[in-house]
Every structure is written in structure tokens, then in C-alpha cells.
Length: 127
Image (cartoon, rainbow, N blue to C red; front, side):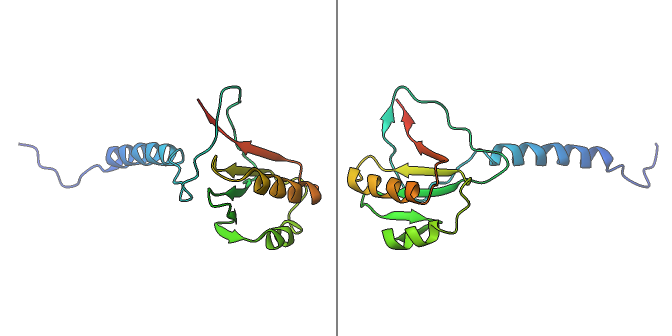
């Protein structure tokens, strides 16, 4: 009977690296939405592909008309102050709950346009 003095761990490392690669690629597609925003349903929209080189700035409006920037509730005046420091080419993603008031949506878009932040994507959900 042949005696093994050591164990070859290279195949084990190869398998572990493949498993790690699978976990990392699938984990990037799992999105945790803490805001519980129910997007409006549309039929004629395109699939949103976020830019790969820059993370988009997320602005959200909840069903209670709360404006959220960087996971913090903002007043419209505080939002305007924070938007002054944003690069004009910064991609911005706007998530608006379908129960939010249209007036709040218009005010936020007006603030964005007032700061010349025109790289705006408004998210909806396909029917």
C-alpha cells in the first residue's frame, strides 16, 4: 500500500477559486433595496444599464414624499446645497414611488436642472 506523506492542495485551491468567482459574480446582481420604493409600471421603457466607470448618484422620493440622498432624508433646501457640489457630468438615478406626489417629483427635477445636472435617469418597472 502506498503511503501519502503530503496532500496536494492545488486542486482544492482551484476549486475554491472557481467557487469564489461564482459567488462574487452572482452577488453583484443581488440588490438590497432598503427604501421599499414601488416604481411606476411602464410598457415602453429601456433596460437601465448603470455606467461602469462612475457610480450614479441615487436620489429617491418615497411614498411619504421624503427626498432621500445618500440614504439620508433631505429637505429640498438641503438637497439643493448638496447638489451644488456635484460634478455636472455625474450620472444621477431618480427613483420615485408611484404613490409620491407629482409636485415633489417636479421640485426635485427642477433642483437638478437648476444645477445643470442633466445626466438624469428616471427608473420605472416594466409591466
